[in-house]
Image (cartoon, rainbow, N blue to C red):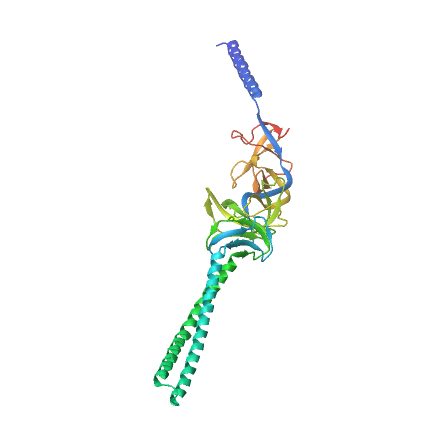
Length: 379
């Protein structure tokens, strides 16, 4: 091959290589850059809450139950405020009253029979003594004396029987009278505390029996909330924490309370592993009533100045979380250490500064060092 042909061939190869390189550079220059949204790492207050639900209940309540069988003659309406000693329900006491009157009459009759027997025995004894003196003086026959002596012995025997029997009958009647008196008094059920009747279990005219619940009352100025606590939140809920209580019945209103107890027992209810907490509601409690279902936010922490990122910027689990931090036109996989978290944000303890920006909702195809076209979230 001549020198001319060799140089011509070499020139063609060089020109072809340059053309391929130019094409590759052109292609990569035209390839689209991945678009991402980024948001600033910020310092701000962070409120961490446990959100759940619960029911309002009285701290101290009284449930009145029937102490005798009977028909309801009168019962107060729910919501009625009462003082200690006020009658809240009356039962028909006619049967007990009639039985009481009979028992009292029987007791009097028994006592009267004993007194009459004593009088009769004394009289018969005195008559027999008089007849004995008359018979001794010859003024009375022996047959007549025998009759009066026998009569005295008979009345003495009756008295001896009654002296034994009547006290037993009177003692038994005293017990019955005591029981019937208690029943008649129980027909008028009275409030033992000052408060409000918040529930009635019977209506006027209903028949009730001993032990039936009738009326519940409480001091509605002192209420608490029994709230469900999911098992995963048990380690965060502690006595003394503040609660915010709301109800659909009162839009725009809220009440405050403080956790007093956390039940150390977990049960499964409606496919939830839960325990319970009790929180006393700070007065005034106007509007809340026992049995009302409420929404509860328990304040776990309320920090005033925390470095934080949105929860939607974090990739990985709690043990090895990371974010994609914007570094110029590229992104860097940046491990972080997380502190407090709530539903929307996470505290950053290590790995980022307040000047950093991180990718929002990072997609699976993002990689460390990738060139991106970043747009600030919200713009």
